[in-house]
Amino acid sequence: MTLTLSIFGLRARDYLDRLNSCFSDVILEQIEALAEEVRQAWIDGRNVFICGNGGSAANAMHLANDLHYGIGACGPSPSLPGLRVEALPANAGIITCLANDTGYANIYSYQLQVKGRPGDLLIVLSGSGNSANVVKALQKANALQMKTFAILAYSGGSCLELAQVPIHFQIDDMQIAEDTQLIVGHLCMQWLSSNKPTELRPLI
Image (tube, rainbow, N blue to C red; front, side, top):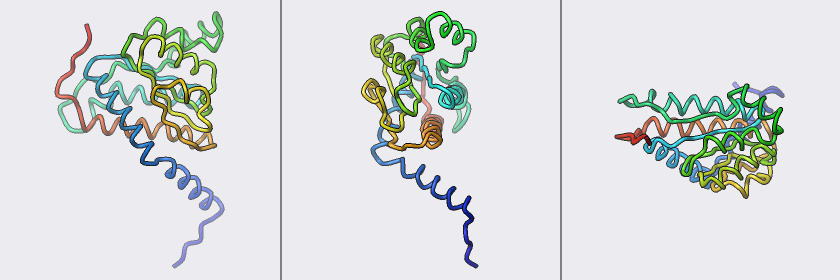
């Protein structure tokens, strides 16, 4: 029996095909570089910060949970403590204070000014790559000698040039852009949980 897809089914198939086509071999190499850097930060006890706006902010919180707990608890034993990771949009008190007192463009860079240290990681999640607050976050992180990554879509915007390692999905679709952020995070999580360090060396 031949199955004829409905209009919804055809559009869904097109969406999934476009999502799958985003993950080229070059992109996978860039994701691997992110995963390896996160693993080394895990070993060294360095901090990982994640930020974004809207759906990307929600994704930042989701991925912070995966890296804080999931990478150590899931996968082959033994269970290990997870990363020192923070989603910068997670604290509403800090966000509203900084937005009110200094302007929304500074809500992430001001947090990094206090919390960031050389060698820490910043992962920016952005569709356009042009939102002022993530641009300023990358600028601040680079000035602090942190290691900077950005998961981007569309043209990549200003973040494409500012991030030391941009992971750029050239797709003009915000929903697919947000999907790619989670997929990158979940690819890293599953690899990390299957390649746990034999020892952790937390900074004092």
